[in-house]
Structures are given as structure tokens and as C-alpha cells.
Amino acid sequence: MASKRDCYEVLGINRDASPEDIKRAYRRKARETHPDVNSAPNADEAFKEVNEAYAILNDPQKRTAYDRFGHAGVNGGGFGGDPFGGGFTGFNDVADIFDEFFGGGFRTGGRSRQSAPRRGQDLQYRLTITFEQAVFGLEKEIEFERTEVCPVCNGSRAEPGTTPTRCHTCNGAGEVRNVRQTFLGQMVNITACPTCDGRGEEVTTPCHECSGKGQVRRVRHLNVSVPAGVDQGTQIRLSGEGEPGSRGGPAGNLFIVINVKPHQYFRRRGDDLLIKLQINVAQAALGHTLTVPVITPDGEAEEEVQIHPGTQSGEVFVLKKKGVPRLRRDGTTSGSGDLQVMVEVRTPTRLTAQQRTLLEQLSGTLEDAVIPPAQEKGFFERVLDWLGGEQ
Image 1 (tube, one colour):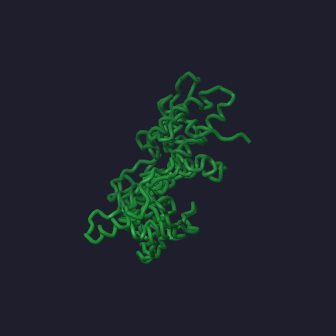
Image 2: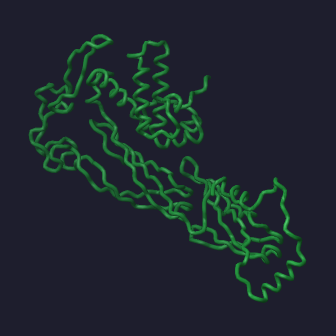
Image 3: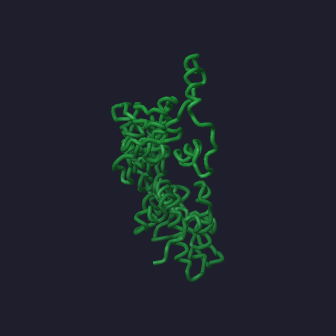
């Protein structure tokens, strides 16, 4: 089986492309490859490839998985089903492309685009949590505003006790047609009825609650379960909690985007926690047992760290399984990372007379300054390694 091409290459965009860039590129490529426009023998396959690439890159979660794991991270390495499912709005975008060609809707499956069910828009909610909550998860009630079906008329737009009537312009079809000559030949151009907006019905007595719109704005309260191990930028998808669809279409999704407050002591690298511990010269030379804070579900606790004699600045001591729970793709956790403790030997800047005398006596027994071999890592190189190449 031939390997799939890179999605970004298929659409001709860079990996840092914005959602707007992705949609523009998709519209351009779809126009070029659509079989009704492109007579090349492989037009069908090319058009399918463009749609599959857009199905991934247009979905925030699928794009994140693809960026990390390639095609293997998206539905087990392939689509295996309808590329227009799961929130993909490629069909509507193709219809928009034909609008640009022909100035209106196009016919597919015996139904015009304007009168077909349409999926509601996705919503995004930014949730700020503490470092500890990101490590161990939490239950949180959020409040946001969205459009909902009018509870009085149930979306019919008509005042209760009244019923809509058949549209006099389209006779209930919801669409009007005209024939146009194009470079592809004679095309039947189908547009939504301007009188009933494609519904096929006219409302003579609008609902008093929604003023005949069939929808109202409401504040929604929702309990969100944030799993342990989330990180900055993690997205949680709540299906069907977005804007309602139109003409019987499904609702969109709500994406919870996690923002994590920084911690006073800890930093995070994947599933590991990083903390810096400053010790004095005597502790580094003679060895010492010290305590460092660790994060637990009940708050902060302490763990002992055994500093061995002769410890140098930049050495790292690892406390196994004292890090962040490993969050799996299905939202469950499996095991934990480690707590990495970097030691920094702190040189005193102010000395008492007694301390100065003792250090002068010690200095006379120690070796002079030396230049270490070039291949030996110094303190700053160790810090960069510890931080994964980041300062």
C-alpha cells in the first residue's frame, strides 16, 4: 500500500499555517482537483486526498495528533470511514467553491445545499487552572453563552398555537432554480428561496420569545472533568455542546483549552517535574540529607534527597514516580513521570571572620584552579540538558 503524502504538502502550506490559511489553501486545491472541473484521470483520487488532508488539519485535536505522530496518530493510521464525519465541514466548503463558479448552490443527492442539514459551529472556552490541578485533575463548573433552540416554539419560529404556511414563492420546495450556461455546459443553478430562506415555510405569527428566529441566546452551566496530567494548551472536546445545527443538523462541539498557571518552584518537561535545590559548599563536599517538596493529591509534602559527598553544581537526583501522571489519548492515566532535582552549589558572598579563617585554612590544602577537558560538560551545559535545550 502506498504511503500517504504529508497533509501540509497536499494543501501546499507550512506547518505553522493558521486556520484561515488552511481553509484558503483547501478552497484553492479543491477548485483545482474537483472532478467536475479537472478532467485528469486521477482527479477523483486527488480530490479525495485534498479532502482527507483538510479533514485532519481543520480539526484542532486531529491536527495536534497528526503533528506528533503523523498519519498513525489519526484514527489508527488512516481514516477508515467517512472523511466528512467527526466535525469535518469539507462538504460545505466544496459547495462554497461552486458558489464562486456558478453564483449559487449546486445539486447533490437530490437536495440543495441551502436546504440540507448543517452542523453547528464549534465553540472554544479557555479554562485557567493551577499547576497542581493540572497534575492531578479536577472537576470544574464552567459558564458560557451559546445559542439554543427556542424553548417556547421548539425552533418552529411560530407563536405556539399557530403553524407556518407553505411558502408562496417556492411552493414549499425551499429553493428556486434557473438554468445557466457555463464553461462546463448547461448548469442548473439552485439557490435558497429568498422568501423563506430555504425552509419551505412562511411564519405569519412569529414566536414572541425568539422573534421568529427559532433560536435564543442562553447562559449554560456545565460540569467539566479535567483529567490528571493535562498541560498548557491541552484541548478537551465536549461533543454536541457547541452552537446548534440548522435545518435539523447536529450541534457543534465545545473545546476546553487549558491554561496552566506557573508554579513557584516546579517546572514541567513532559511527565517529569523539575526543581532546583541550592546547597552550601560544605553540604556538597561532605554529603547531606535534605528534603524537597513534592506535589501530592492532598497538597505539597516532602521527600528526602541523599546528597552524596563531592556533589557538583548541575548534578541531577531523580525521585522515581514523583512526577506527573501520564495522560493517555483516551483520557485515562498510566503510571507517572519522575521528579528531577538539580543541585546548585551556592558560594557564600558574605563571610564572618571565623568563616574566612576556616576557608583560608581549607584553601591551603586544596588544589589550584584547573581548566577541564573540552569534552567535559560544565554547569551551564548540564542545565541545558536538564531543561531539554531550553533556558
